Every structure is written in C-alpha cells, then in structure tokens.
Length: 346
Image 1 (cartoon, one colour):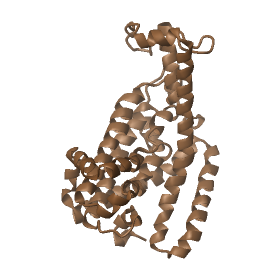
Image 2 (image 1 turned 120 degrees about the vertical axis):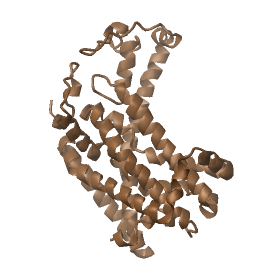
Image 3 (image 1 turned 60 degrees about the vertical axis):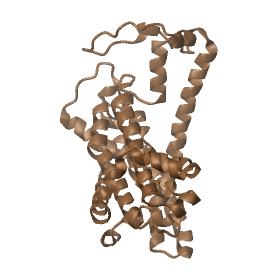
Image 4 (image 1 turned 30 degrees about the vertical axis):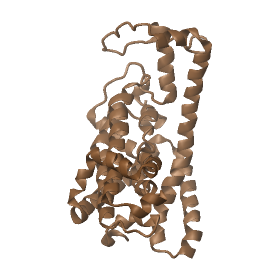
C-alpha cells in the first residue's frame, strides 16, 4: 500500500522490511505531517513560561536556566524516551493512537464490549518471524477487567476521552502556532496596526492550511516537509549563534539541579509556569497517533536526527540571549523573535 493511501505496508499483519531509501523518504515526509506543532513550540514556550507576573519581573539567570532545564528534560523524557523508545513499539499491526492501545488491551484481556471484541491471549497473533510470546500471568487488574462490566465501560470511556483530547489538540494547537508565528509582525508594526493585521492574517493562513488537508498525507507531507526542515535548520543555526555570541556557558542549565533551584526560588509562581513549559511537547502525541501513515523507523529517524537536536539548540539559544537581556519591560520582549540576530530579521 502506498503512502498516499494513508498507511503503508505497516497496515498489513505480515510486514515486509522496507529498504533504507524508503524509510528515509518516509522520515522526510513525516517532518511535514508529524512535527509541525512541536517544531513551532519555541515561538511561545519561554514567553508562556514567564507569563506569571512575579517571575516575569524578577527573573534572573537562575530562573532562566531553570526554565531551560525543565524544557530540556521534558523534551528528553516525553518525546525521546517515552515515545521513541517505548510507546512507538506498542503498535497494533502498524497502527498507532488511542484506539490502537485499546484494541491491544481488548485482545490481551477479555474486555471488549462488542461480540468478539476480546479474545484473550489467543487473539494475539505473533508477527512473522517473531518468537512466540510467553504466557501471561493472570494479574489482579486483568481479572478485574474481565469480571466487571463497569471497568470495561470505563476503559472504553478513557479511550474515547483520549481521542477527543487529541482532536481538541488538533484544533487548538494550529491556531496557537500560527498566531505565535504571525506575532513577529508586532516588532515592525505600531500598536494600532497590529491589532487590525495579526488576526486577519492568522485566519487567512489557518483557512489555507485546513484547505490543503483533503489532498492526503502523501501530498501534504511533501508540501510541508521542506518548510519544516528549513525552519528547524534555521532555528538551530540561530540557537548556535546566540549560544556562542551571548552565553557559551548556557549548557550548564541542562543539569537537573537548576530545575530544583527554579522551583525552590519561585515557589507558587514556578509551579504555575509549568503549564507554559509543558507546551514544548505540544503535538508530540502525533508521533504515535500518525504511526499508521509512516513507520516506527521513519518517525524515530526524523526525531532523533533532526527534530530533537534542532529544538534543544533553539531553546538553548533563546535562554542564552535572555540571560544577557532579562531586564525586559513586558512579556513580549522574551518571545522568540527578539533573539533573532538583526542581520537575519528581514
């Protein structure tokens, strides 16, 4: 099955091993489909993390390093370790997402609400060439799921709730990403102008983006992959420049010690800022939800070879710039665009 039909050989139970050229092509396409949200998060993460009044007006280098440390470890623990090394392996014959997990549970446990929806261990077919799975011990959780209908309904409700949250994220995140991107115009427009320009421009871009969706994953991937790839290369290059030019010692913030110091010093304000820091992994659930459109290997290659290092360099560059310019008057002065070198700001 070709990529345009939304799946690939990953949808069939007996999956053939793709050549590396095909995997690299899928990895390139995944940049335009899977990583758009997480790649644009540097536009607003630091801005949102310092949105609390106390932190905004009293932020020093220790607080800036603490935010960078939290961002680094959030990106490392959730997209890299959780998704790349663990969750992507839990595919349902190549499919991913909330209902893929639900399907796997129902086949391992007799918890399906539909006739034939849960076949226990016998329903789990080993993959071609794989060693037979060992017999599962009947745990108390599994026994309770098989015995109580209420728990089975609760499991289905959680699967539906998770799917609804992914859909909600798919509606809200593009709006946040686009309006954050367009907000760079504020630096070249006066207050009256940007009030009448930013919102119409944002709406026009969103309408254009959603209009392209019906062309399918194959074409959308090829359209947006070069854009996302160029964006990641640019923000990583800007990050390297800011690190070298403003603060070469910003790498120290990667130590977890600064997370502890940040929360200890900021207390309630620091805990409130965690909501803004969590935005750095916005859209990372697409790595698993879009698994059926690509493959495990392609998503892992794209993230580990380009997306993850580019994002780390971008966040470090922003922190390096802010650590030398943290006497900002308002929250807009710690956004992404102020850290762009003047020679490139066209």
